[in-house]
Each structure stands twice: as C-alpha cells, then as structure tokens.
Length: 244
Image (cartoon, rainbow, N blue to C red; front, side, top):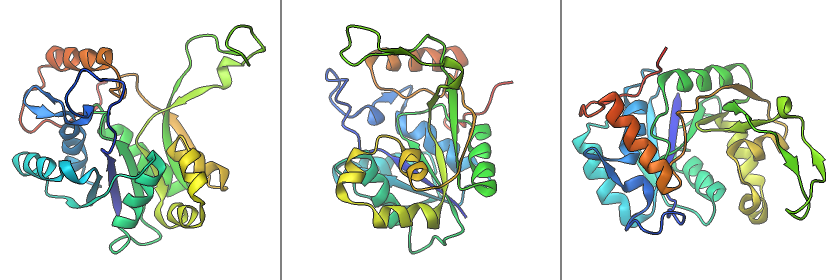
C-alpha cells in the first residue's frame, strides 16, 4: 500500500491575526487542508489517508471530508509536541494496517498545491530506494555567518537544495528509526528526511515545484488566493494536477 499521512497539527504562530491554524482557513469555499486531501483522495495509487491533528479540530475535519467525499480516510493521530513527534504518532496510527514493505507519504496540510506528478515521483523513489523528497534549487547566493553580521564563508549554490513535502519512506525502516529514537532526537529533528538520512536510509531527490509552497505567512495566503483565482479552481471536486 501507499499510505498518506497529512500533518495538520500546527498552530500557525506566524499568522497571529488569524483566529485559527492556517490549515483550517477557508479559501474559496473550503479549508486549506482539503485541497491536498482531495488530491490524495483522487490519486489512484493512494490507498489510505491518516490525519494528524489536535482533537479539537477532528469534528471540523470530518465534516469537510464528508462534504468533499474523502473515502480513503482511515483515522486520526494526535498532534505531538514537535513535528517529528506528530509524524511518529501518524506512523503508529497506521501500524495495524501497514506492512513493513508499504510506502508512507508524509505531507503538510498547509501545502495545498501538491500534484499528482509529485506524488507519483514520491512513490517511484521509495520503491527504488528507501524514500524520496521533492527539492527546488537555491536561486540566491548563500552565505554562512556565525554572528549574522559578517560573512564566515560562501556556500556552493549548485550543491544546495531546499526540501519540500511530501516526503516518502519505506514504512518499516522509517518507523523502526522512530521506535529507537530518543525524545530529544525527535524534538530536534527539523525535516522528515533528516532523521532518515542520519540513520542510513537512502533518499532520492527529484525536482519539486515553486508552486508547491507551504502557507506560513499572510503573504503566502495572499499568493494562494491569487493562484486559485487565476486558475478558477472553485470546482467542488478539485484535484490539483501538474501543469505542463
């Protein structure tokens, strides 16, 4: 199986003017989380969907999934005290149905423009290696500084990439790493693939998309609204696809 775990436990601390976490802000008639849920629902190779979210939002999420006819949803996992703790909770939530050979695809609820093509590459990469992650190139010159005031060194831009989501992994290997990780290790992990790489899993990188951005700030939200208006994506059965 290919199992999607949608991370929706964030509190949106960088959008303090909004009365709810960013993933539940309603844009053009549906909450942001439902844009990615619809894409995973309609992907032919995704069999199950789990959502990691605070208990106070479960009823709200279920109501919207029913409205959008999300049938692959299998259950919730409680949000953890860090992103990686939330991922671990999601891995444990699907352990009764998942086998070690299955692929788990971890995605941020606040990345609404995930595409079928990106999901395809995640699945393909995790079949060939231990996992896969979309990345985009760094356009600006990157400097290293110890104090934020002076340049310590210049980093080689051609060797630098920014990671996106979703990230895919062999379920058995990835969960075992979490089973053996300390609380401190989970707390200090910043990216889904970081803990996999540090524990010897081979992660394939493939080209992501600038449009596959995460809504973090008010500017991101404005850009998302503008993109939807430009594309006319008001269809109740929306499924984000790659544009070629």
